Image 1 (cartoon, rainbow, N blue to C red):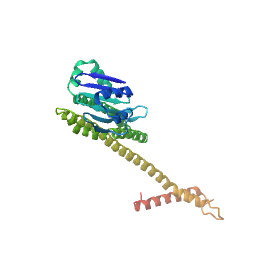
Image 2 (spheres, rainbow, N blue to C red):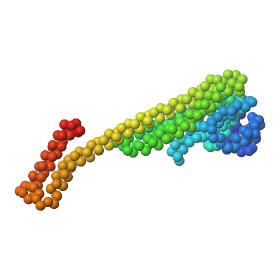
Image 3 (cartoon, one colour):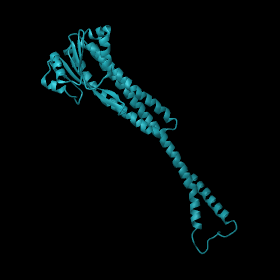
Image 4 (cartoon, one colour):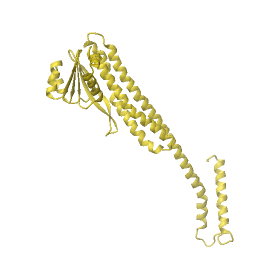
Length: 303
């Protein structure tokens, strides 16, 4: 399916390109046959290729998947001439839908972003996409806030899984968006061969918007690393406390076990057993052993 917005520049938006859509693109860009074939399917890596009078860029952006509970890559291919831009995509894209709706209904909006060259439109397109990507990071911020609160509410064990899932989301986001820097850097350098007038500022703005988004995700990654470390420290501290309690219990039970075992040995003559107050005598011996053991360990600084 192909949609078109026309002013001084032409925008062709193609969703899941068919043969007839490729033919329409060919009328504007005179595409080599290998590029026509390439556009019929998704391309595995991000890149920028320069042709005689246009640029071809393969870009990927993170989009949050409710089903997978993490960011997934969404591909947008771009064909760029000074007065024509084509966006080729394989999934619904909210930023593009917003731009198309505004451009289709508001003449002032269309005149501002479609009334000069493709550089102004690309600046708008990438700004919308990166703004949307930063909104995607908002749900991660909410998770980080919840994790922070729950860690100090005694829910450290529950937070292990929550931290791991949130870190996966941030890492998937960064894995998708970071390689785009190289494509945008090449675009900044190669755009001079496409545009007659200097459009460097627009492409620098695009690159800065990308870097700002990456910085936000880096901040979230660093925060999650710190929270994971804090959560592990609290869990370790609690584990040490439990271990200490168990050690004390073992310490106090050891003399009882040893003394009790000795007096249970079936011999012909067992001292104390059968005498008046024999139970109290055995208990006293046991307590004295506990006190002596405690004093010895304290003196050796083992407790």
